[in-house]
Length: 214
Length: 93
Image (cartoon, rainbow over all chains, first blue to last red; front, side, top):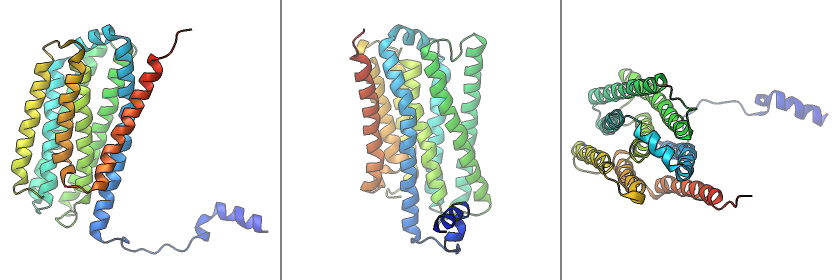
């Protein structure tokens, strides 16, 4: 009988649990804020190690095939890469301003800064689209050689992060119009900003490694 | 935050980052031989450090956050160093 009861409990675990009571966070707002921020830093650590695998592959294959990497790197568009670097660092700056502005209740400034950030992200994506389509139309794809495999994988995963960052900041921007944030309540803007800065950090390494040092 | 005028600080930080980006591109014009990659990584790391300290407010965070920020760099080092040691010390059969 005990066994049947146990199996039943697996199928209907909610019956075994105490009823859910709607309540506020168990912590005071300040603890909640710093806990959320620490959680974001932990997530950023896993993100860093996600890209870490690609950086490890880059280091090893570069050491093995220096000529291939020099030729591949020389074929990348340094001007477009530099423009994208400037755009991304600029958008990182606007996010930093937004995070400080919300703590002074300057909602209008937050909205302007987040709009600029989203526009920068879109321009970054458009540049990347031209870069990819130019490469592909010249018959260069992820399968061309190991350098381009790593190039497309690394910049592709990075581009995915730009899109996710745009979605996150877009939702935050929408919510600023709903009056959800104030100088007492800005955790989402701060940790969303942290995510965007990580996207910038990764690109700071990808740009010289892929485009410049050949 | 902690500084008197954070907006001014952010502007200065951004100008510094732009300058460092220019240095990165400019330095790539010259061939330092084996030092090409270390120089590029050094400049990138300075930029990354500036972004983390000022834009990500690491400068004002507690020691716990610093542990969460630094420890993954150690793991990244292990990942790259041990993979490389494996690959480059294999004896061809």
